[in-house]
Image (cartoon, rainbow, N blue to C red):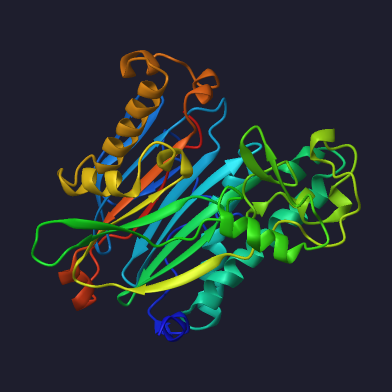
Length: 384
């Protein structure tokens, strides 16, 4: 049945949004990198940016980002119009460039691919958009190799959700996570159901997958300081970027020695092939929480769903971020008020950049296929 859903032809996507040029950047100035429609107001509290409440095609949304790194490495956006909704959370590592590139280009490629098939959306549509984005970033690394070789060591996890014609497609690379809040009958309770797949070497199934793919390499996963890492270097096994782990020509000087492998690379070690599943939306499906792993380091799926369920829609994303920060402070035996005073870069010793997008599902709108107007295009801050 899942296979059938994966191949469902959803003739519902028509290109929308702004920014049709190369890179697809929506150029505006301010806290938000791009902002069209959706209602509500942006807010800022120290290193925390938020949109407490807004409206997208199929209900309300809430969005928040907190910065910890010297330069914000997370990116996130919502693109929504009469025929569909696209949500992306991109958690960069090694620098901000890959996450920014994905945020600039993945949705643009998705629109182009779906236009080629007259609006039909399938798992293959999304996979092709990921492939074009990976190819574009690899070409950029090659172009800049002589002047910016360390771009080869930058990458990004990717979490994408696409809603059209009552079906949710979920695509993931790395360890960002999508959790569904689902009503349990008439009990008033809401269950937490994880819809995304994670690709992190700390998960036993990912280590087994890597060992099967690289059976010739006894060092494909290495335990260092209590953390499993691919080749002893990186935790995630799939991403956009990290081309030094995919193409031998980029795993050499002048990139830093810590990224260079001691033996020849005979095949790609990391992958940009996303895990994609589809989920037919049910009237009991209440809301979706998209978040980078910075949130899930401190909150369980159940805790996050409980927080959203028991409070008003407005401020949901900010509430999740603040709860995670309070837990990060508690783990270090300090007060949240003191954590808030710590500036970016130093803040990274206490928590990661965190991006959260919460979509509430209005099934009256979904069942009628009547999207709310106007279209929405909102992107989180490029930096705080």
